Length: 250
Image (cartoon, rainbow, N blue to C red; front, side, top):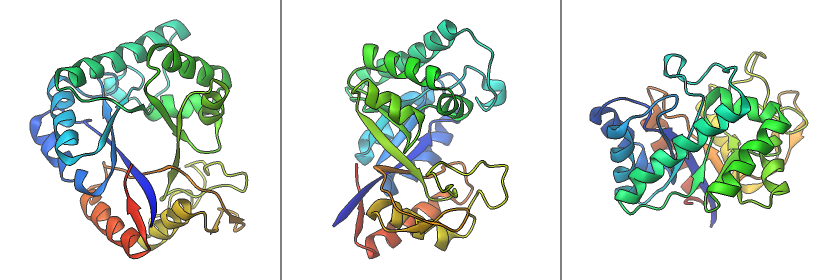
């Protein structure tokens, strides 16, 4: 049976009740990226998200972003490179401390929001971020967009990388994501999302935004947990993948 990892950004609320809602997704995914105090997250959400990840047997990683809670890390900040790297380091270390208290090993780092996008658009920034992770968090793989800048930076540093794909985003002919501002960049029909997820998991062809057949595989597929129907989508995705002979596991 083919296997694929499904990852989801969690721990981005403020209360224990938010974490309880997040936990409803965990039986249907294999990896979670936990906000660690930059764009979102606090002591309660970090501790409970880690606990729930362990109870559900899924991998847990750090999800650092720009330290900008007001804009949820979705706006680029004009920080010096040193200040930005220091913030990312502190965020990962914070989650590491909570994980150590529960004896839970973290497995990876996935950047959040504007920082994820900025690193993909700036080779120097990507290399600085990967070098930071390689130097100070060598056991944490980089979860990054497949066929793109952070993946190349990780390979350059010979650091483990988990290649991420998206079931609900169109790709360009060069295997890059279609910009969100372009018409049709986001796939809304669930059946099309499932078909693309299956193709990304198995290496079968699927159509680009321009209608060209694309063919590549990824290690992990992102499931957006902030969709109001996220639990239903996750449950139905798991069922559809299993019917296609694809098992969700890390």
